[in-house]
Length: 273
Image (tube, rainbow, N blue to C red; front, side, top):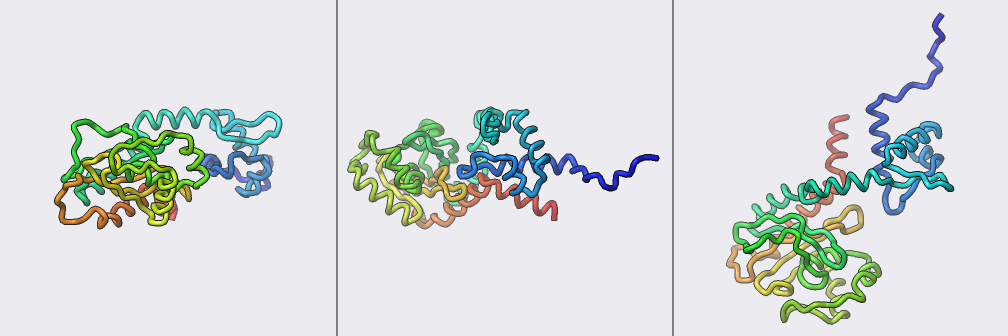
């Protein structure tokens, strides 16, 4: 007689196991840089043996690494390789292309998406607007300073003040035009005003021929990029740049949802429901 298997624990379907492994990877963040087997089992409502198998499998593939003495698990080198490949094949720029195109079409201004690069902000995606400005060269991969221009200020103003000062305090402050602020106390006051307002506006601070408005893009509570609209300083347009703030914020929120994986999570819930 074949032994009864009614008392055997049910086997988790393969796809459900994959989904649980991905949930574990996504659970790592700045405040949760490592997991132990017991605490993972408790938080994910798993048996310790299941938690151990999942963590060990991820470590075997390089997605996690286990510290030799504490036996706790941290993110591994496979994620770095995948992130580097993702960035080389489009990365953030590819995610931003469609929202930027829509924003530029709606506002007729040139739209930029920029990410931090040391003490600067680097443009990774750009969409030219109908009314410009238009440059004779591509601005993609150009870097803008933290203190001059809306694009940089919209990121650095929303960092923790201590983190910002640690980044910028010993760096030279360049003057790019007569409108560039170079006094460090005045620059810090400008960062505070920008943070309180929720957006940055500049005219001629970095480029005498343009004015710009920018907002931060957040993942959780942390700024990760800036989104900027730019126009010629002599542009004769029906709607002032500041009137386009709602569209700019709406696009920033859209990008925040994409970068936070909330769009994909919502799609998955709808599919499951």
